[in-house]
Length: 183
Image 1 (tube, rainbow, N blue to C red):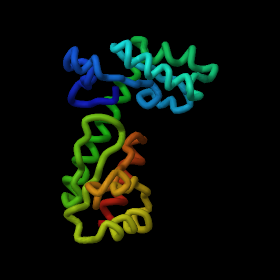
Image 2: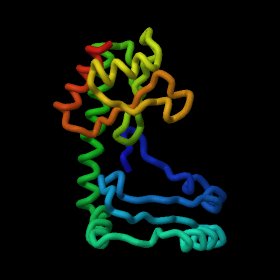
Image 3: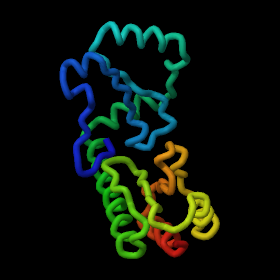
Image 4: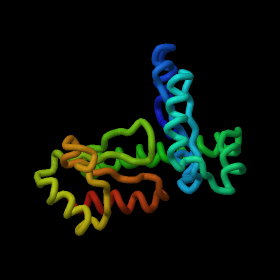
């Protein structure tokens, strides 16, 4: 898991009742940056639910993988794979904390929503006296950075933009500087 300060607790672990009504879908694709590895797995303790899911899956073309799956997938879950993942999480956590410190010091009007997991962080521009559209324009044409528009995640995403922090520190610092200088 790409989690930082807290351990991820799957909902099915909360109670037997929760486990009985939960279908967990997972893949090592995101954590190990393996988007081309077309394999995921299902954990479902309720036999009736599992049978219903299997009947749906049989009607879809979801059972094809590529030749790399047999080699990559088992290795992702070995001690070596977990060691690599720990290094990745440490690196991403450093980038997350660097971003928070950077904006706090250089432009406190840009609020960073401290993420608990993943390599995507939400920047809150609510304290900037511009419209959402003006902020988006400044980011793209003045800062020359393309961030995910928070509006695409719902109306609460107004004046919020998502930045990918999974990049070399040097490039991240350049992006943070560009954003700060534009505002």
